[in-house]
Length: 300
Length: 299
Image (cartoon, rainbow over all chains, first blue to last red; front, side):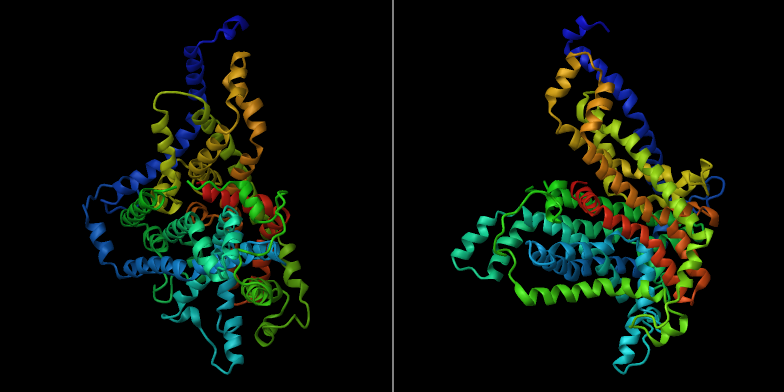
C-alpha cells in the first residue's frame, strides 16, 4: 500500500486490517481450545447418559442411571467427603499457618528471604514425588514417623494401612506441600498495606495482636479470599498424590473424586459412568467460579 | 481481579531492586527469639522429609531400618551411581524435557497472537470470544479426562508425546491469553497509533514491537506452562502406555512399582528425579516464584 494512503488512513481501513489480522491470529488458539477443552467437556455430558466401554460408538442409552449409580456409590460418597475434608483442613490449618508464616516473614528481618524460599520449595515439587517421599515417611518399617514413635516406646505405626488414619496422613502432606504457596500470596498482599497505618496504631498504643487483628487481617482480605478460592479448586482436582501415597487404599477410604474417576471410570473403561463424575466435577467448578466472582470478589 | 503484579511479588520475596527503608517490624506481632524458634520449628518440618529422602538414598536397606535419623555410617554411593549410569533415568528426564519444551514453545506461539488480537484489534464478537476462552480458567484436565482420552485416541495420538503436548497447550490457553492480553494492553497506545500511521501493519507491529517489549510476561507464561507440564501426571498416565515414552512422573511411579520395598533405591531415584526442579528453583527463584504466584493471582 502506498505511503500516501497510509497517511490518510481512515478508521475503516484500520478496522479492515484488524479483522484480517484477527483471522490469522485467532484460529490456532480457537481450534486447539475448542477441540481439547470445550468439546470434551460437552462430550462428557453426552457420554454420561450411556453405558459405554469406549469402543465403537455409544448406543446403549441409559438415561440417568449412571448418575443414580454414582449417588448410591459408597466409595464415591467417601471420596466426596474426602474432598470436603481437604477444604476444611485448608481453611482451619493451612490458611492460619500460611498467614502466620507470612506475618513472621513479611519484614526484612533475619533469615526472612531464606525461610520464604524454604517454605515455597515443596510447592514446586511434583505431587507424585511429594506423595512418594511421604509414603516413605509414613512407612511402618522404615519411616521416620514410626521410628520416632518407637523411640518413644510405641509399637511400629502402619499409618497408611490404617483406615482411620490414612486420610489424616494425606491431609498432612497437603498442608506440607501447599502452605508455602498461600504464604507467598499473603506476603504479596502485605506489601500493599500502608505502613503508616502501623506507625499510627503504634503511636496510639495498639498492641502487636491488635495491629494484626485490625490492620493486617482486613488489609489482606482480598488475598485471603483468593487463597480460599485456590484451595477450593485445588481440592476439586486433587489426584496425583493419592496415587503415589495411598493408591486410594486401604479399602478405598482415601479416594478423592478424581482418583475415583480414574480407578473406577478409566481403569475399568466405564466411559459413561466415569463421565458422570467429570460432569459433577465440572458443575462444582462452575459453582465455585461463579460464587467467587459474584460474591467474594464483589468489592474488588 | 486483585491488582498484585509480578513486581509486587518480586518485591515480596525479597529479590527486587526496590529498596525498602529499614523500619521496625511493625506488622510482625512477634519478634526476636520466639519468632526464630517458630520459624526453625516449621522449617524443620518442611525440610526433614526432603533430607531424610536424600540421605536415605545413601544408606543400605538394613541401615535404613536401624539408623533412621543419623547420617549414613557407610555412604553407599552405588545407589546413586547405579541410577545415574542407567539409560532409564536420562530417558525419562529427556522425555519430560522434550514434552515441556514443546509445550512452552507452542503455548507462546498460539496464545500470544490470540492475546494480541484481544488486546489491540477490534472485531465483531470480540467480547464473546474472549469470554469463551476465559471459560477455560477453572477447568482442570480431570473434568474431561475420559472424553479427552477418547479424543486423543480417535486422533491417533494415543501413546505419543503429541497426545500430551496438544491438550496441555489447549488447557494453558485461558490463563496465557488472559495474562498476555492484560500485559499487551499496558503498552502505550501511541506506539500502535504512530506505527499504523507510518504504514507498519498489525502483524509487523506484533513481531517487532509487542513481543520484544513484553519479555517479562512471556517469561511468566513460559514458567507456568513449563512447570505444569513438567509435573503433569494424570494426562501422561492416561495417554502413554509404553515405558520408553514415560515422562519422569510416570517413570518414578514405575520405578517404585518395580522396587517396592527397596526403599534405599526408591529414595535415591526420587532425589535424582526432583533434583532438576530444585536446581531450576534455586537458579531462577525470582522468575519461578513471581511467575507461579502472579499467574495464579491474575488468572
